[in-house]
Image 1 (cartoon, one colour):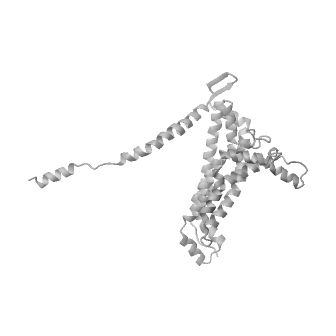
Image 2 (image 1 turned 60 degrees about the horizontal axis):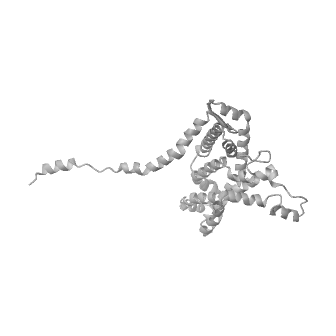
Image 3 (image 1 turned 90 degrees about the horizontal axis):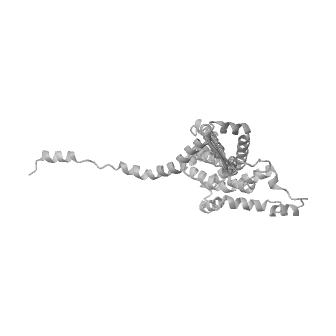
Length: 315
């Protein structure tokens, strides 16, 4: 018969099985892919931005280390400031109506008193997001060209000569902004709807019992509690705006006309890549990265820095 003390010693010698290593194994593919396709190209971009490296005809110039000369040349030329201004104006022209319409639709679709079947509406408003930006741009290019259907309608209504939409700065920027609005307002609406639906309905019911009006509930309850989702939408939309490329590239045939007032930062970067000016393209990419980081931090600070509770309802 085995003594109880011996069994106790054997039990103490048994080791517990650790499963923590499996967690590292499961997340390893993400870090591997991130390192290969994001981190290494990012470091390579920073590295190349300090070199003079371009092609003239069949002759390759460089790579030659020039330090910050590429950055100084970009700032000296002033083009990057102009293209940054173009990008922000076009983004704001599309984002302001986008966020207003999306907020209105999100509040409407989530209103429990209306009892709307939102699945149908969500499918309809999200459909433009499924269309390729290139196809969307080609469609608008055909519609608003000098001999397109829109000008035909305007001529039949009494306009003396075709309006050159793509030769006017305001109309060109407006068309690009309008296309971005159509493609993304559905996605923004669904995100805001998800945020509103995550708010406890008892809060709204309590406010209504206390006599709060609809606009008071929206301003004092919905918007403060929606702030995290709103911040996410604002920052991701801003980053997407800074990376705007396909719509203006196709609509203006890569020229950014008229007078380069529709040229965005990524279109400017693409020109350097197309001309094989790797060093200058790297500098533009790094500056764009810095601009994006600063603006994202600024927006995050402004929107969430002074975050407060919902407070009381003003009668």
